[in-house]
Image (tube, rainbow, N blue to C red; front, side, top):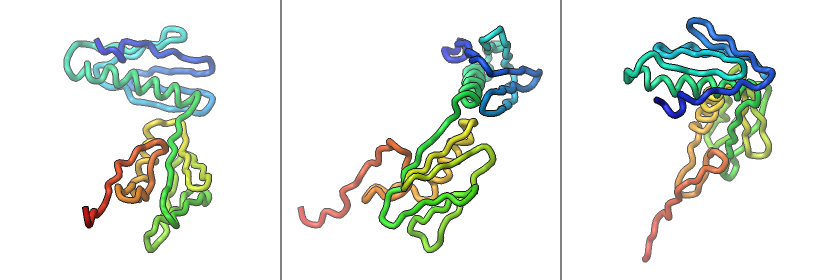
Amino acid sequence: MSRIGKQPVSIPAGVIITVDENSVTVKGPKGELAQPLLPGVTVKVDGDTLSVTRQSDEREHRSKHGLMRTLINNMVVGVTEGFEKKLEVTGVGFKVSLAGNSIKLSLGFSHEIEYKLPDGVQAKVEQNTITISGIDKQQVGQVAAEIRAFKKPEPYKGKGITYVGERILRKSGKSGKE
């Protein structure tokens, strides 16, 4: 039995979970999320808890058991608290600004990069720190990864876009004389 899959998901007050034959919908104070049900997995709501069970011990059903429970738990956390990722822009002359529903990045290229935020994702910019927030964990992580991909941190000077708290392995560079 999956260690994660057999744990029940607690449903906090103010959250409504609806289970159809092929999808799970979670409504909360911050919004609404839907997830299609994976084949071989059944979801049942009992009062203020939700349990996920699998139909058989086939390899495919075992692999989807814990995944489905985690996806539902992430939806519950998203509609109650939300998710956020912080990115830090490091480098001389690197600038970040927010213009409406898009982020403008000046990263040492000959042109300025403009990244349009998808629906359901918000951003805040404070000096050279970008905070991306939303209710969908997958979407917040994807947006953060796409912004980071514009200028990944380089190992010699550490310039680029990093997650806050990310450790960059630094290289010494040319040694010249020993």
